Length: 362
Ligand SMILES: Cc1ncc(COP(=O)(O)O)c(C=O)c1O
Image 1: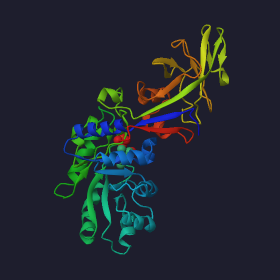
Image 2 (image 1 turned 60 degrees about the vertical axis):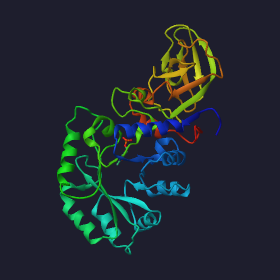
Image 3 (image 1 turned 135 degrees about the vertical axis):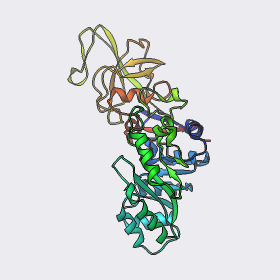
Image 4 (image 1 turned 120 degrees about the horizontal axis):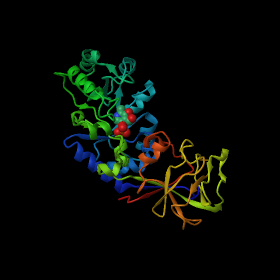
């Protein structure tokens, strides 16, 4: 690992974004999604930061992610969003005081086949319309019966996940919320509905618990809006350096496949970052980077270790200058759109060739 590509993670931004979530959903407890290595930001430093800032719980996808946090002495409640896959995982989950999000009856059978444990903590995830994970809403009476015959289990609450919360005009979200509420009339237990888009776009989705992920990292889940417009601060800034600069005559083709033709005599810069670092190969010509605060467009295809840039907007750029790929001053949401994807995927796609640096640790 060298200093050619650096991800600078500002932990103060994570704290700030948590505060913003609390502002958006006052009165809700916050379960922060730190799965997928905290969306590529580094699970342990992010979880420690959130824990110190008083987050109410953390959420990961699977037991390995939870164990990594426990090994790093993160003591906050941690929910396993996909539940457990075996008796061994369930035993570990009980031992490590993890909250198991149950989504199917085979998982209940698994837990009921284990010796009774006072440390089992469970959520029920209901499928209110996303049709990915979760019990059908009609199963609520059966689930209530499960709770009644397993009084030693600690019941954390009822959870559902929104399929279209980032689509303000879709009727899906209100349908899901309505169906979830109707299925739970007269049932006790906390509720949790909203992810980032639910928290920002749908006040109706705020319940005892909210489950933000993306917004904690400073990016917007809402189309046409970037994080800073919503009061969020991007937590990760990805930078590289210019390692070459050449002047080419009009008509010169640049990079693999001659993917870019110089429309005039112009300077082309080469930055030391490519798809082996996590820059999507689908990033289109014209996608911006920042050099000295100026936007310079990508000129030519992304290669494994390098990208080529049109330096006309930054004619004074020299070898050694910093090239900012996304983050402070250039929202990842905007860059992602040039690759036909979302900030989520850019964040999760950074590879182990990128050096991570944490600032504002306390
Ligand atoms: C069940 C569940 N809750 C919450 C989240 C957080 O979502 P977001 O990052 O959109 O806030 C996720 C992420 O996929 C999830 O699967």
